[in-house]
Image (cartoon, rainbow, N blue to C red; front, side, top):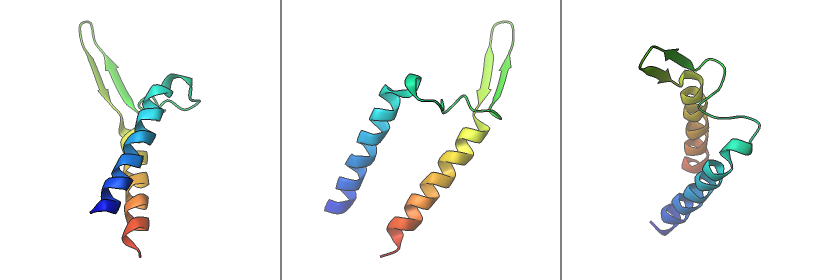
Length: 69
C-alpha cells in the first residue's frame, strides 16, 4: 500500500508539472492533429480522439511495467 501511494504521489507531481508548463511544451496534449473540433455559432464540440489514444497507450504501458515484478 505504501508503494502505491508513493507512485501515485510521483504521478500527480508529474501531471502537475505538465499542466503548469503545458503552454510552453512543443506538443500540446488536447490539441493534437486528429482531435475533433466542431465550432458552431454559439457552441463548440471538442473530442480529443488522438490524445485519448496516446494517453491510453501510455497508461497501459505503465500498468504493464508495474504489474511485472
